Amino acid sequence: MAAQSNPGVLSRTRSDLGSDLLRDPYPTRPTKSDRIAPEGFAMPNSNLTSLSAPASDRFAGLATGDRTAVAVVPEHVNLRDVSIPRTRVPAQSPRAFVAELAAQSLQHRAVNHPYLNAVGLGELPDMRWALADFGQQYHGYSKDFPCYLTAVISRLSDPRHRAGLMENLTEESGIYETEELSELGEVGIEPEWIVGQPHPQLFKRFCKAMGLKDQDLDSELDQIVIWREMFMNLLSSGTPAEAVGALGLGTENIVSTIYKPFSRAVATIPELSARDTVFFPLHTAVDDHHQETLQAISADLARDEASRHQLRRGMLKALSLRSVFWDWMYRRALDPQKADQVL
Ligand SMILES: [Fe+2]
Image (cartoon, rainbow, N blue to C red):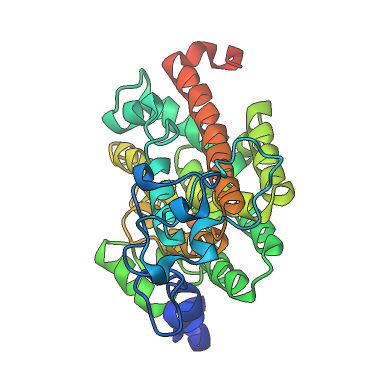
């Protein structure tokens, strides 16, 4: 197996590669060398003061040591962007900002969609048809996931960020660390089901087990091509922060939640084996290192108001695209006889 023939890869731990990346570069407690984010820096919005106020008012309530330019003036704000609340002091540390965005992503319709609810509860008119249809359509998006990841890697200038995502890409290719294989084993995932198998192949395995043929998977409908192209355009033509927001907060951050209904649904199809459907528990049952890495990169990028807005917009764009896909899938699943008429 690839996992055993390459001990150099498997003997590394994630912390070996990502210790610098995952260390909080913005400590909330002051240190001798870092007084930028002293303890108590974060304030409720009601305490924020307009930058148009006299300087003496702006510093009201802040301890002398906190009265730094960084504490009150967001850097690199694009003044042409009227939606940026540039009169507000950034009250949160980058880590707290990213954690709040991550929580918001889970409230989006893309994560709480009636289609997902119906799939999880087995309440679609023809569950078997609906799951096969999901496999056929979603394959057209998920098969390019390594390309999405590669596109984002190419946008990042910090080598630590690129190294972190390269590790995600390695796992997407079916190469795992020993520690991860053992975690997966604890939830019933056998190494021989996944080692050396790129994740798009694992999804294709599910599609084949549902009876789909190669020609079914090759015949893509416009809606899927459009989703894939718009998502790739976002990753490659948006700003780097938008790209990270889209792939991280708007995608990796939600996968463990949105695949749960499918995990439950495929378990009700008797002829599907655990090996056939391993794609779903692989993405839901274990601690998601991928979202951890992307959140750390997001926090590194969230240094100013403009970057924070770009992260948020990238996240919302990705979530909106997925939500449109679920709308389409839901209408197809509610009336399979007329599925071809659904735009
Ligand atoms: Fe994956």
